[in-house]
Length: 361
Ligand code: PLP
Ligand code: COI
Picture 1 (cartoon, rainbow, N blue to C red):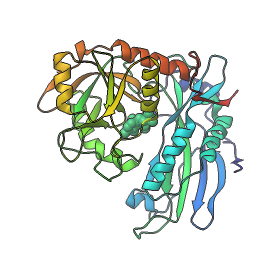
Picture 2 (picture 1 turned 45 degrees about the vertical axis):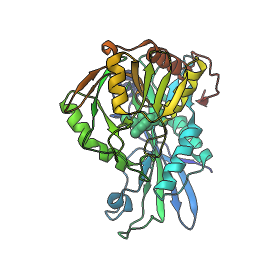
Picture 3 (picture 1 turned 60 degrees about the vertical axis):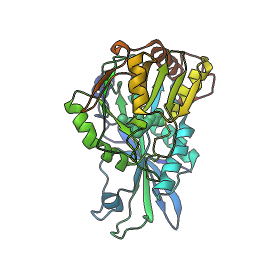
Picture 4 (picture 1 turned 135 degrees about the horizontal axis):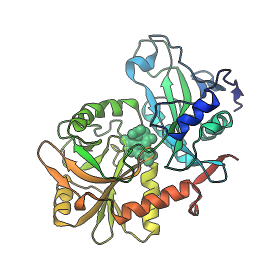
């Protein structure tokens, strides 16, 4: 698919852009351009373009505004020391966007169009990718929306895929300081045969009430349990979880349809195995974690995701209890995984698994 490129006649002035990327905060500034590709039921995908960043002209009857047919991705561009710009496992994000599309009755974007869309956006907005110091990156937000003007309830016959991008620093500004997690006891994110595995806006809307409670209690993320029994740990509002045991083995909740298939999760499993850890993907109860932390059997807990990278968890809190993980400090496995993963992403650790793709020289 060919992309038509229309340069923004009024880009952010260079000095202003440089000040922004020197000190970016998550998601507050957007670059000068966006990608748009249109899909129509009778025509398929067409009209791929890079256009100036700006508002979407939308009819108030547009389907996404009423029935929430929306999916998205999160993926970063990393600048290496030699100035080149790279991304991490983009085909995995493309495949997940396809799986999310299928679940939400949206059209599946071809994998090569997804990867090309990132390359084309970088071809005009490459100057927005920060220097690597301080774990700065350019965060791409690819998304798909139902864009048909029609109030009937059925899968839309017109959709748009777009990509916007924002220079970001670490999601948690405290660096490798452990975060506190609020345990949602009266609020579920996803149920059996629901949309938990899709990266769709509604899952995040469903998480916000509990997240708000968590913020009030000084917690920066919320942890969801299974909707049926509130027994098994699933994931955080925007990250997957890992538990490190005293004997060096590591466990993470298995993917049973209600959890997002994190690409960081998958990569960390590989890196842990490379380092000789036994990794179990299985059901993990809150009770096991409570007892394991208290007895010293569980020595580290960390969360991971594109935005969060790898972040130690220091405390779990709920209306009923407070559980502090091993002295509320980042442990050695967490630190080693974070260094190795970011090392691969920034090109300073060998990319043994061929995860990196160059977007621009
Ligand atoms: N779980 C949820 C709910 C998320 O939103 C994310 C972030 O994308 C993740 C897990 C981690 O996924 P990934 O590592 O692919 O970014
Ligand atoms: C990401 O990591 O890309 C996410 O979508 C999670 C969210 C907390 C921004």
